[in-house]
Length: 163
Image (cartoon, rainbow, N blue to C red; front, side, top):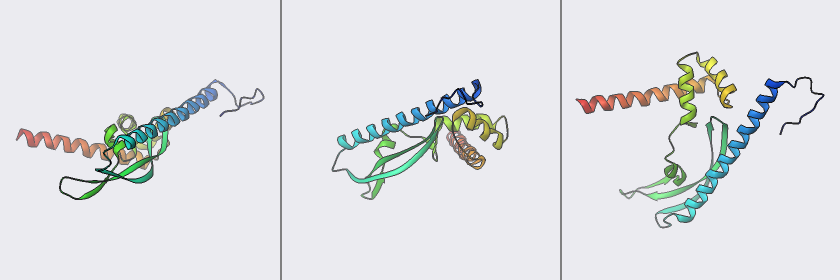
């Protein structure tokens, strides 16, 4: 937490606003993490035990507009219809998690909007100040490339359908 002191000469409205924004974003990340872990526990308790064998927890993270959320999710071994075994995260399936790598869809949309107007470095700086996301310009570039590939695949699918 931020310690308030009247002797702090660097304290002004802008600094106070930025500190409160960071605190609120960190609280939001903690709440998000707790909700994800509660859902994951409930999915474990209600899963088909014969179909999904619990194999432990894996640590992961996701960058959101509030910041980075570090959490653990359960992984399950599952046999598909072909008889092959694979691993699945029921939490991801339940939430229909659509991300661009470790970047949330909301953050990816904001990145693409920014990059349309300015350079990758400037977009990165703007994202850091407006969304509390600490990303490198290379990460921003990678997100734009992945989103571009997805859009290209969607367009190609529509062309194939039309033909």
